[in-house]
Image (tube, rainbow, N blue to C red; front, side, top):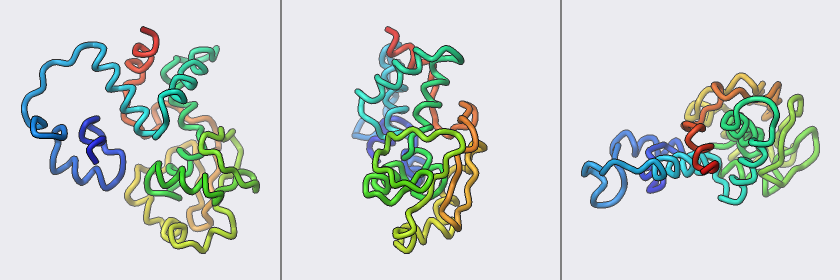
Length: 199
C-alpha cells in the first residue's frame, strides 16, 4: 500500500481504493506540496514505477533494458515493455488467473501453470506467440482458480489486452501475437526509464 502511494500508482486492485481516498504520498508530509523533483529523481521514480508493476529486481530490470537496447527494430522503451510483458507471470495476471502480480508469480513458482502442456516454474519464462498458458489440471479445483474461472479477477483488472485470447472458464489463454506498447496496461513513460539507464 505504501509503495503504491509513494509511486502514485495502484499496484493491486485493493490499492486503487486507497489511492482514490488518499491521492497523496505516504507519511506525515504526504499532503504537503512536494518540492520540484530533479530530472534524475523523475527518471528514477519512473523506473521504480515500472519495476514495481512487474515486481522484479533491479538486476533483472537492467538485463531487460540491455536486451531491449540491442534489439534492431523498434524503440528501446517500447521493446523493454514488450519484453517485460512477455514474462509468464505478467501474462498469468493479464489473463485474469491471478489478482496481483505477486499472486501470479506464486502460482508459477508452485508449478500450477503450464505452457503448451508442460509445467513451468520460472516467472521470468518468456512466452512466445502461439503458446498456450493454462492452469494444470490437478490445480484447477483449488479455490483461487475456481474464483478466477468465474471471471472474478477480470472484473477488478484492466480489460484483457488484444494480444491475449482468453477462455477464462477453461483457465486457458493463448498469446496470439507480440504485445504492442499502447495495449499494455502499465502506467509508465518508458522514455524516462530509457534515459535513466542511458545516463
